[in-house]
Length: 250
Ligand code: PGA
Image (cartoon, rainbow, N blue to C red; front, top):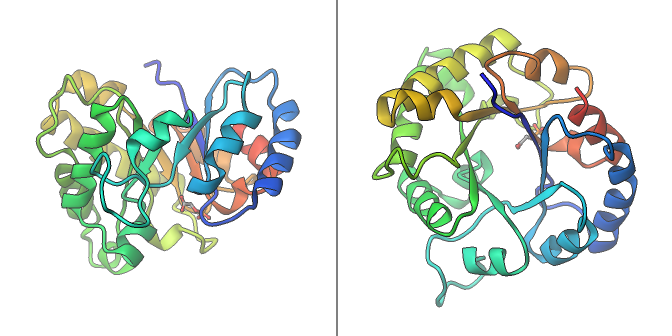
């Protein structure tokens, strides 16, 4: 199996343009010789042009944390896929749990955004994961299957190849509580099997499934080192160049 890992930085609503520039100046030399994995950073929309500019000539990709499903229009406060592309963004997160929790994103909205990203050749990183109560009552598998089926509705196997899934147990995000490698591997297997059922076996076998939720320098190896785990979506530990570079080199 040759799935190239993707190590992704979700900066959330952090960093000014100057801080982003300083990060990149410190980060690039640390990963200059590193081509084993793909690297992507996901800054806030106002940072996107500057980050693309600072990363020019490097292999680090840039993505949005969110796009709207319409291509343009009277949607105050939203970012369109066309705007993302025009400034050089190539990836987008879709359905991050903070979007679901604080901004009311449903599986249906996630699905519409996924269609839009694929239509425009943007690599979508679709985030799914259970909340603590769901895990505690044994509903994790059902939640993952429901969110995956919701996201993939109407998407053909042919169109699905670029899709990356991020398994992010909500109880592990920003809490310092990490899923054990065994828990993550079990969830990833459920997701891959469901992707095979919904799309086809080949697409599922090639689909990258990242783990996210309190990934840090000291736990990244035990997680990303698993055959089933094809990279990481890193929040807090991606804000400092040294720690994100160390995770990239897990
Ligand atoms: P965290 O965030 O690494 O700070 O837990 C991960 C995420 O929200 O993608």
